[in-house]
Length: 406
Ligand code: COA
Image (cartoon, rainbow, N blue to C red; front, side, top):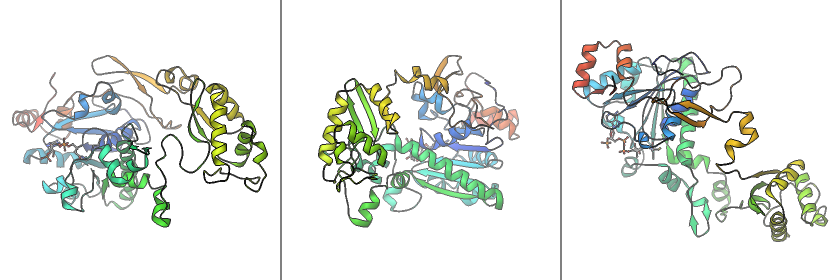
């Protein structure tokens, strides 16, 4: 692994240049995935305290590995010049802010396209670049996006809505940023004309959380919050066994037949109420309460490992709920090297998830740890053609911040 500035050639995104200016998870994580798949990722951090992600103890090491840190005041006149030069050779630029900040500060899409007409620009915000004025300028995080999108109102117990953790709104947004920017790039590379993408986090969650909303929008149907169990079907949810929790997803005719037999209700199969071939045991079906009760009673008499194996043999999707302690020791995790170790910039070992997904022909790679704040500022500016005198001048004026240790 290298602490240097030169990215080795690897991955499906080899040669792709991504620049981003954002903090925390939603936008940076999209660039992170691309960095793990071979892209050259430049992380623009402010010159005062850098990305607030730096305040975390360990997760920053995962979510900023393979990146280069450029500490730049992007909105000062001379900072804008550096930024515009930087994006001349970029393929994708991603920013996250409280609404249309870039436009307000003169860094419009049109100006960026004057410097690079095929640039794919992604604006990430809580509520979008346009809409109700007093809303679009608001700060937003995962929890507010979940609340505003119809995602929060679906999760948790009846008396207490609960956030889908950890940071589901951020990570889903990151996936949407990565996929939409690569979609736009596909077109931009064919036409030479760039794109500007307005990723509003609430809309990501609205789109990803619309499964049950469709029933409401089209038929006025609402369901109680799911809690630990699915709203519509028997045998779907988290169940207690005698020594732990099982996550069960009962679906399909042979699976339903098998479970009814196991819980002593085999006589229901093939009746008018549950004809052969019944794929879904609906919660509003005649014996649903009895079926749920018998599943619960049955599982309480069994160990979770025993049920997982037995149900899996009957093609029923069932899995023991693994804890953090169990994950690193699990033979399947070990066989697929789901966790790996790498070295931080200070030379300390850090353990975390490997690179996913696993590409057969062009695998991802970790080529460097998370850089320190501004560690690559001088190298990046010198690659852009700035002389060391000019770099020093920009540093003295506070436009850029150079690496502290240099
Ligand atoms: N150079 C100069 N100024 C910079 C800068 C840079 N490189 N990077 C940020 N700034 C400015 C911002 O424009 C902002 O100025 P303003 O408050 O006058 O608008 C200020 O520094 C603070 O930056 P910001 O990163 O926006 O921090 P914040 O604490 O005010 O807000 C968020 C953080 C995440 C709430 C906000 O950026 C936001 O809502 N983003 C969109 C949604 C999002 O990504 N949420 C986080 C999901 S993990």
